[in-house]
Image (cartoon, rainbow, N blue to C red; front, side):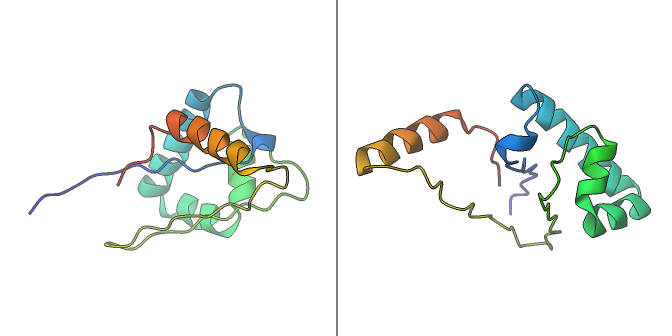
Length: 109
């Protein structure tokens, strides 16, 4: 039996993306580590993720709702984002898919 350790990096909307993806990874890793180490911090993160993200320096625009879901052992939650309204013809979708999939190297199981 193999054990696989993972870290899933959330996909934040463009409105709250830091200057670089590596900055976002660092912030999320910090939030995750604090949640694992501090039950009160974890409780606050689950109850009001936007407030916790703001405390960690992530700008959350008014009206944007963040949700944090805690997985159980043996369960992983995948989020299907809304389809962009500006998707055009099939070839455009395929180009965007290729561009996004080529840049995703952080999703692990």
